Length: 407
Image (tube, rainbow, N blue to C red; front, top):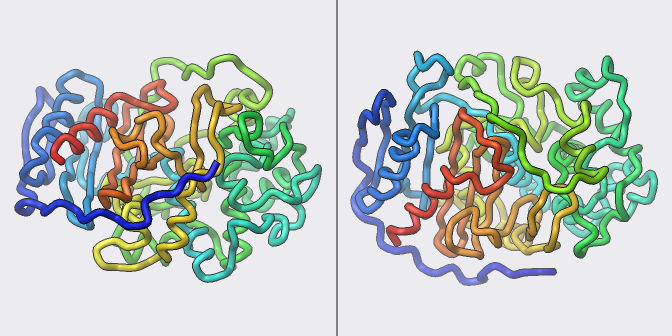
């Protein structure tokens, strides 16, 4: 299935006055930041999440046409509630990282160094093993490659270190036999790749660019935008990371199958999250660290078709192609009907506001980013009190709905 985004973008509404300072105590939670007149409902929704005791600490930012509508943070960065959440605190956003990481591929496609339509085995020959040789970059980015996890078993003494060995993990993934016929599309041919997506994207990027995806992101995208977002966090920034409180219960994966078990539930399905080694590593599918504003600025490259604040970083035609839906229907790994574009989800489930033509992605525990090219609107939500929702956490849904209510 191929869905086009609008080729002509409607003019944005005239933005009201500049954002004003916002500071409030909600119980014991300090809230502060900036709110543009007209976005009072979004500010009230942010405060309500704390008033209802469903937050510990969080940040939310929405940007339209490069202009900030709302940029708030509040609560606490630690479980003991001793460190107020500051504007430069970094939160791990887990799978909200995926569309941001995908931007590096779009950059290289615009420069002719990668191609959506070419098999990734052309640049990564080892990946052709077990019938994966025709998997294109577009198919890999839309979760059709058939390797959402490792069938295993994996030596438990080897596995933790392997997640931090880029080349070793790439070798293991390239040799993996797919769970289904890769690239087959349709209802039986796509399944969410929660961690392995990082190598399906990152290894072609590394080979095409001659440097790692995290380095490319920092030098060519996050740096020029001033976006405080990192894949592979420098040691000097670890002190800015918030403390995560895990979900109170496991997520509901529905009826389990071998690919879901391999992707999420096997002992070797993911690295140990948290800690210095995890923060330093580049896992482009799952370990981005950023502020809400940094997240929103990078998602703005989707909303602005490669341009933010007058700065053109990615070719608009490449972004338009990235936002074409590749596959739709029941996912083999997560219990949702989804519409996958390249590295980013179409908003068919309304997780990212009322407009079905918007796009976004959620991260483990509740974080999310979204982009609405029709309104040139994007946003990011980060937090440290995780919920068990795989997608559709009510906290960011409330915030995004409130932003739209002003239009």
